[in-house]
Image (spheres, rainbow, N blue to C red):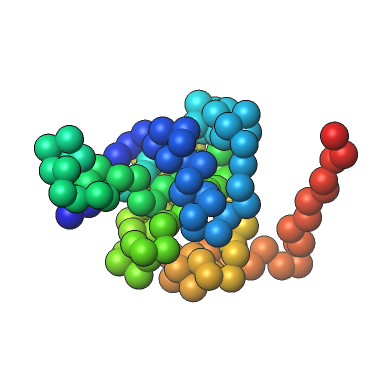
Amino acid sequence: MYRLVDEPPSLDEYLDLRRSSGLSPKTPEQGAPALTGSWYFCHVRTGGDAAADPERADAGRAVAMGRIISDGGWYFHIADIATRPEFQRQGLGRTVMNRLLDEIRAKAPADPYVTLIADPPGRRLYESLGFTDVAPSLGMRIRLPD
């Protein structure tokens, strides 16, 4: 049993979900603003309460997440889609993605521009939800030195 929660996981859970799912590790100083500065954040928890069910090590544990970064006007970027490996292939990523898209549909002004950067393992999921390449545009980044 799983619960979809309309808020971010704890900072420790956020950092652990990124790391365990194969996303690049982040520091607490990087993660904390992601939790408070996102336009919308949700996560999936295993059912039950760890205090009430001490025999289940994963009771009440955050196992999947996703968030939206946005100006609230027209631009919405989906980020941090992550599911712990032992919970993959159960539809949790699709559940998170559907909630994120539903939130944009419900609250964004007309004709929002929705983007994400797709790592190869998630590409099939994103395409099944209607995402397409932005060609001829090209995703780019820059790493700024400390």
